[in-house]
Image (cartoon, rainbow, N blue to C red):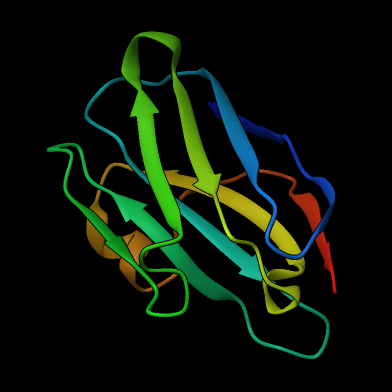
Length: 122
């Protein structure tokens, strides 16, 4: 019912910035909760940032102060602004959505995107 597609990934030098986008189509509405996750080779999937239908946000400690999650409900699009990127930010980034925030918190949302690769070089 809901399809998510990430874009905006790429390669960047340490200290640079990228903005990821996640476009939603299908049965979507402003009441959805959104999240960004990432997974690097040999590591477990990590919750990067969440945004609730009320606009409240949360971030992994490793990205606080550097990343900002936002959404444009009119465009059904989620964003992740990533500043001061570090090599350890290198990972495949996925967006996700669910009607219930608890499912995003535990990392089991109803809908996932296919992912976009972010590579940060030192």
